[in-house]
Length: 327
Image (cartoon, rainbow, N blue to C red; front, side, top):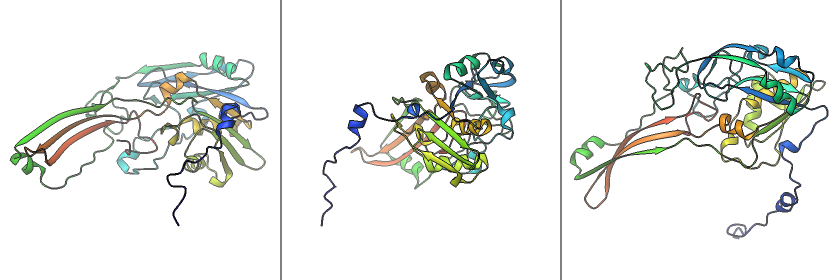
């Protein structure tokens, strides 16, 4: 018996709910006594953090906390789920910047207050002093470049992949026609209708965390969060709401996926963070930027005899959850 679903139209059942405004996104969820968070982000692409003074922000009535790397203690990194190789692991991202920032928009502090507006006002008066360092904006990954993102590693080159099959050099030497071209794919990012958002609610009595968040990798993110918080994965319930677009950008673990649950557990209150569009441009995961030099060796009739080339992929300041797979 043939499968009648293949090639047959399937009626959508969710459209009426969306068209009537009955969707439930992260921004629509409200918890009793919920607080609101804003992220203080780096204005520098590369620099050393000299000072973070939150005294003015903490003096504002209704501000409950300003969390920095110092308050978090041992700052966890975001582990790799793919391409778990030692070279790549050296460049994992911390959930919050401590001694150094490596891109514009990197989180430095989390302000938690009674309302989003109050949290944003308080974030404006968090005094962050950063000593600028040389910036690298292209795929110059030489170890002698002055803009070393990780001084201890002596290079910005996370890894090299080499693949060889057959004798390309011999084929090029004998081919009647060769052609070389350079191709580039610029850096880009997703622009979903709904920016990212997360709500975390810690039940101290049951020692359980409930997380509402626009991610399409709930089980992977649950494992990572449990490891970072030092609790069992079964103690975390991840709830996936309606999502206004993903496009790959929601398939990884972002720093806020730790920072907001950490704040909720520390303050014993539900905490909500909703990304604004400016934050999205700065801080959401961007796609890779790639340049490729490609050579083809052909016969006169166009049959390809051999191909060789090299590509350089810019993954940004860190190697994130999916490792070098995008490259």
